Image (spheres, rainbow, N blue to C red):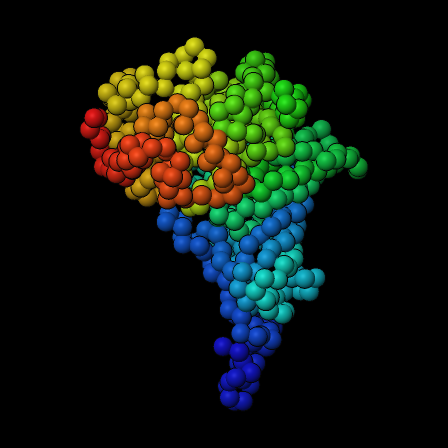
Length: 482
């Protein structure tokens, strides 16, 4: 409620409370300034599995992050400059931030009040932000970044490595190293400047814009020109060997490899230009201005991640894993899930890309892999085969299971059933068209099923794909084969 509408006595009492709070703490988000009827933005977007992730009331368009890191002490300093557009009249808005100490916040160059509660940084600007207004917020922060443990037990956030650090963000870890709107539905462009001790490198996604050394410290600038969900942002600090090449169409390829992994990685990483070109044939134009990879030591990280333009690998990847993470550049990075319930769209397509690549390069056909999975003969352990049918790919039971086998393998089986229903020529057109229709955007499972039905072809094909949703995408257990 606007305090000017309160009776005089109540307004005076509220003013005294706010004055007392100002004396007690700098975090006074509960006491607003002049208002015009604006309301606070939401402290989450109510994702089905992470309801407090992300924030309502605004849309971020650009992050400009300036970071400094000391590996010996694990101390991180940061300034996040955030450009956003208000989607409603805002009296306050939230950023996701775990741990770290915030020292200063400004909005439009003027000091703003703020408070911390859990993973929420609530900011109350001096003047309310009108709907449609583009605004600029700056947050200065520092501290020792926390490691985030996911519901499935995996580790993310700002991870310590043997010679530096690695930032991984899926699904919530990015909030451990910079404040932002950390839900995949809010994508933005990025500029990052990372200063580290001389002799180390700081590698990120996009293109390296500058590298300067002064006073025993080196600063690396990276620019990500295409929109990116925050969970796909990364920073790798350490001693890396950098190599550059290009695809046949001229896309720059940059790889950063821990020296202990260089020899083992050389042969497979040399395939990146060919894999990208194969992806262009099957999925359409590569969606970003550069490609590549980051290879860390196996003991430093436990999994690969499709960080945008430069996937991260724990040691030298297999060809299949390389194909999987590069396919994500189309499915997951460019076409990003609307919510974490839609993750099967990322993983189903990336897993199916592995099958297609093997089929095109003298390996098992996609049909053979599908038949093995259906018959329960894909894995040596029967429990692994049964795990594929634990739940429908579009309905993981909870946050701890969004990366389980049904999302990957059964998700890929859904894609193969579509291919069976429409035929190879139409399927390729569907895959390319889907990637083009939502390029650099977000999409939901419903968006996908409607797109497939609309572009499946004749009435019989459309009826076939419609049946796939009930049996394979949402159905419980192993569906009957016709």
